[in-house]
Image (cartoon, rainbow, N blue to C red; front, side):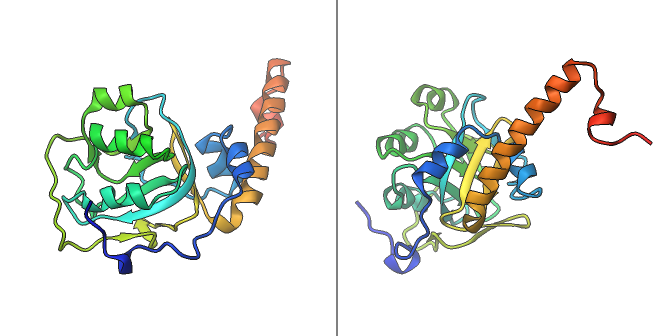
Length: 221
C-alpha cells in the first residue's frame, strides 16, 4: 500500500470526544443542534445524504483533496479511527466520482462513522446496499486520478464557504443537512440541544391543547 507523506498527516495531539457525548448526540437532529448552538456550523446545503436514511454522528477527520483526485481519500480511510467521519474538501472541483462501492466497503470494514464530501460520488445503488453513510453534492460517474505528486492534507483545518472545520469537531448529519460543532463547545451544545428537544415537545403538547404559536413564542402584538 502506498504511504502518504507523513508531514501532511496530523496524527499527534488530536482532540478526542468523550464517547458518551457522541452517544447522547446521536439522538439529536442537525437542525436542533444548529439552533441550540446559536445558529452554528452549517455545511454547504448542497451536501445531502446520498440515501434518505443515511445519518452520521461522530468526530471529524478532515481531508483536503487535490481537485479531481481521490488518493488522499484512500489515505484518510487508514488514518482515521473507528467512528471518525471523513470531512472532505475537493478544492472546488465537484464533478468527479470521488467515492464509490470499493471505498465505502473499505471504510465500513474500518468501522468509520461516515463521509461528508464537498463533491460527487458514484455507485448510487451499491452505496445503499453497503450501508456506509455518505453525504455528498450529488452523483457523477467521471473518474478521478491518483497522483502521488499532488498535494493534500489530513487533519488540517478546512474551509467550506465561511465555515472552518477542524479535526475533532463533532459532525451531525441527517435529511436536513450537516452541522459542525466546534470541539470546545460539544458538551454545552449537546446539553442545550437536549433541552431544546424537551422544550419543543412541551410546546407541541400545548399546541395540541389549543394554544397558538403566537402565544407560545410571544409573537402577538
